[in-house]
Image (cartoon, rainbow, N blue to C red):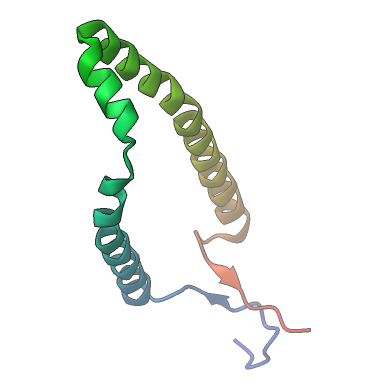
Length: 103
C-alpha cells in the first residue's frame, strides 16, 4: 500500500488471539456452571416427583415448548449475520475483515 493510514488496508484479527479469547470465555462459563445446579426449586422437584409419569411428561413437553423460541431466534440471527458477512465479503473481496478507516 502507499503507507497512508486511510489506504483501505484490510486488518483481520490474529486467529491465535481469537482462539485464546474463546477458550477463556469457555473456561469462565465452565467455572461458573457449578453454581447453576443449585438453582432448582425444591417445591417444583417435589411436585414433579410426586406427580407421576404424566406430570414428568408434561414438564418435559413444557421445557421443549419454552426452548423453541430462543433456538429459532438464535438460528435466525446466525443465518442473517452469515448472509450479511458473505455479502460484505463479496463486495470487498475478503471475508470477516475490518477496514481500517482513519479520517
